[in-house]
Image (cartoon, rainbow, N blue to C red; front, top):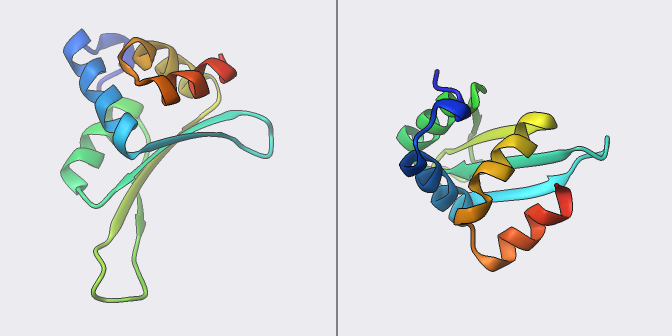
Length: 102
């Protein structure tokens, strides 16, 4: 497990790129920020799971021609911390969304 505070600038930029393409931010029913990343690449999700120190959620599609999807979800203060770290690397649309939460 690698804590976000121990990640290099390179790793933070890598994480920001993944979140930019595969992530989403929203408020849950407790009005707390949620950061969620979902994709079919298990190796990438495992790496993110280690950084976030969170379990991987596996979604098995009903249609057997579709791939399994893997998801990692983070909420609350930890999601805020990561959002602040990745903010300088994010595009305009996601940056605006993050700024609404911090």
